[in-house]
Structure formats: C-alpha cells, structure tokens
Image (tube, rainbow, N blue to C red; front, side, top):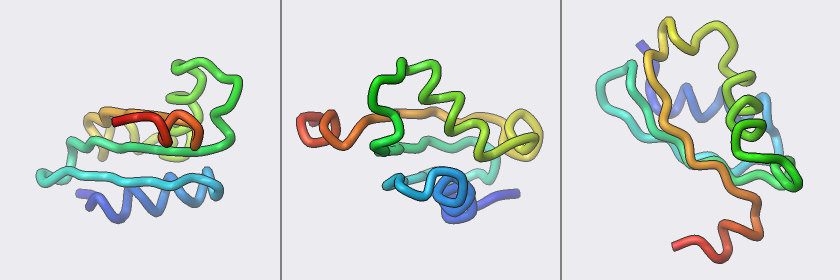
Length: 80
C-alpha cells in the first residue's frame, strides 16, 4: 500500500520541477494535482503520460487508480 506522500515523492523524483499535491486514504486510489513548467506546449494526454511514467509499473498494480489534474504554472495561476 502507498501513502499520498509516497506517491508525491515518486512524482517529484521524476518531475523535479513539479509542485505536487496528492490525496487518498485507502492506499490504492489517489488524486493528484501536478503543476509543472515541463507541461508547457504539451496536450493533456502527454502531460498525464509524463506523470504516469514517474510511477512506472506501480500504476495498475500497487496503485489501482490515479485521478490527475495537470497544469502549467501559468494555468495554475488562473485556475480556481
């Protein structure tokens, strides 16, 4: 089982320029908000793939589900 902090650390290790917030209380289902300048110019699918790549084989196995909201810093500044 993973904790939200463990998921956050994995994402931050793979995307060191990211600001990451992760919530989840059952150890297998999580929601993350990831803000990264690396997302600039990329579509949402590519952004999500970048995040999933940081988690590797854990996705679909130890981490059953991850709901993602990905934003550039500029988008985050205007997001509610």
